[in-house]
Image 1: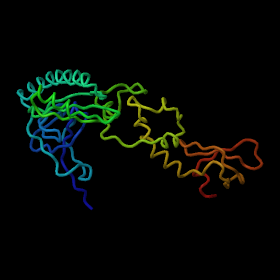
Image 2 (image 1 turned 90 degrees about the vertical axis):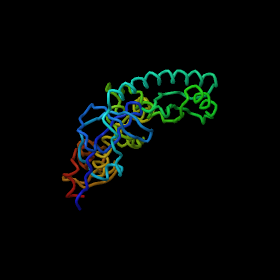
Image 3 (image 1 turned 120 degrees about the vertical axis):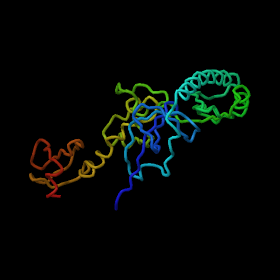
Image 4 (image 1 turned 30 degrees about the vertical axis):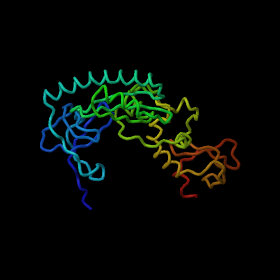
Length: 271
């Protein structure tokens, strides 16, 4: 069937670390431009990540939200003012958390553009009763307070940093939503299972373990298991090692001192 396409524009929100798709409407948009949108968090300002493009319906959540307007100088000034107010609100929140002795770590804080609410993102290992905190903040900031508990991966995404590879964190540069990563992926790629070697800045398994996983699974499916008896052009043999990257295996063949190496496709006819 014909794929239905949507014209979308990706908007980047620094403070929440999210990239979201909107309908560009009839605005002439280009990368780097500031726009005002209505997001789940409220009215806020974001940046156009790249010029509008067509994507398949299934890749976006329909109906698409619309861009409210291209940001005016006034919006920009308000945004900058909100940034300053947010850092003050952050200090206030931090000191109140200390006073109340709550076990939570504040990650960042943002006002919606119209200042109708302020959002505090935090991480915590425990369940936190923050009713008192909200009460104090609401009294002092005189606006709606939203406290959002986020995970350690989200925290790394928001704060940014350098990964063990020496590059900026994937999550804070180009990755959209997090995908589950499992220790099995590291195992299948014959990686060291030493936690310090396969963990990212957030302390969870590195997102990049997922990147090559599909290739490994595909390659692995074409190979026998170590210990299998197989037929080779040189006679019967037993698989003693696998090399997944070039889809080959080492085989101890009867009558040969040294193991022989075969590509998976060389043996297809025999097995």
